[in-house]
Amino acid sequence: YKRQAEYWSDLASWAQVMLLVAVAAVLGIAGIAVRPARDPAVGRMLSVMWAASVVAAGAAVGIGIDAGTDWTGEAAGFIIGLAALALAVPMALAHRRPLQHVVMFAAAALTAVTATTLVVEFDAMWFGFGALAFGSAWLAASLADRLPAPATGEALGAATAIIGAQTLSADTVGPWGELVGLAVAAVLVALGLRRRPKVLLALGVVAVFLFVPQTVFAVFGETAAALVVLFVAGVVLIGFAARRGRGLALPAQKDGAGAEQSGGGEEHQHEEQAGSIR
Image (cartoon, rainbow, N blue to C red; front, side, top):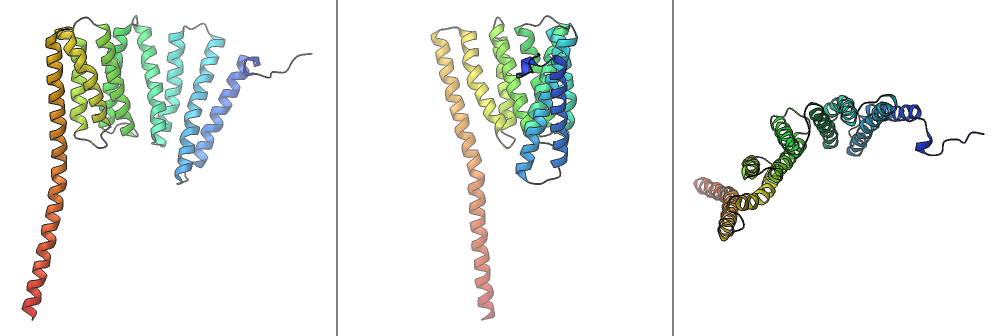
């Protein structure tokens, strides 16, 4: 008597692969079937189904590699990332939603990290450089509208660049890692001031509060001068924020005043016309 499989671990590897491939195919085809619908709820359901389809396909590839090859973790991760990316990219292009962009980003990041580990000996500094370069490239592509759902790409790229800069700051000797972080913060703030919504500005402000203290203490050490510089930097940031807030409020006030003057002028003109008729 042979016991039937009751748990996932009881299934043979080939059965697990076939089941995951079937799940990925069913979810992908179901997403294609419901795509013409314009109901927002159906659109969200499509996003979830296609995201789950990519995950199932990646898991099937991973189990197949583990069962049928002796590849190392890096090589297996690279193949899994490529397979997921090959499925996630057309889905993100066909259904331009944030969730599809997140899945595509995750697959691209996995591919990039594992490819790097196959070429060089991976350590914290390489991770910092890689995350900074990858995040900056992703941010630039999103700003140029080269990626679907670019607002999501901007946030993901900026956050990845900050993580890379923070890794460099923690792993390097001397203040140059912190200076790289300050440069990233300055770029994000400058971009965020020109764009709506202000996601980049919010991330830039987070980066400023993250890297300014680190840079000050890296340059001056734990001395009184560091506290003075940190205090001055805080005052400057608060002053900049207050001035920027007034600058955003003034155009709205001017527009309101202009509309009121225009309305008053039109009313005066109507009175003059009425007087001339009389």
